[in-house]
Length: 99
Picture 1 (cartoon, rainbow, N blue to C red):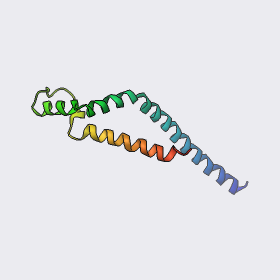
Picture 2 (spheres, one colour):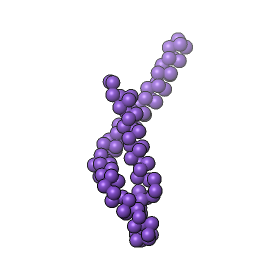
Picture 3 (tube, rainbow, N blue to C red):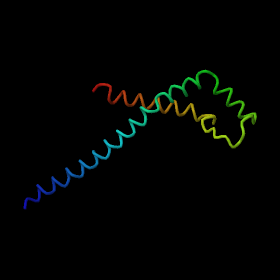
Picture 4 (cartoon, one colour):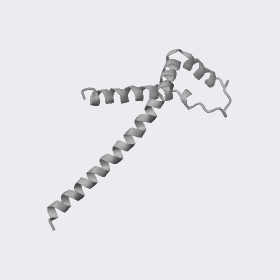
């Protein structure tokens, strides 16, 4: 039995499995990201319109009941999400833009 052949086959199998798993995960993640594009646009417009700030201030004044979920109204929550999206899109463009 050719030990070099067996070792190469085992190594390529490991590499294949890692790549297959990463590609499958990326496909799922990309599908999920593409599915929320309208949500991203709406949140971005909401933040830019000044409505977010008015809602934030209303929350600070206690006008929103405590049991209402509002994680996006944290001081940096929505801003950081939009910054993360911009950084992600920049990274994707940088890496895949020339392909």
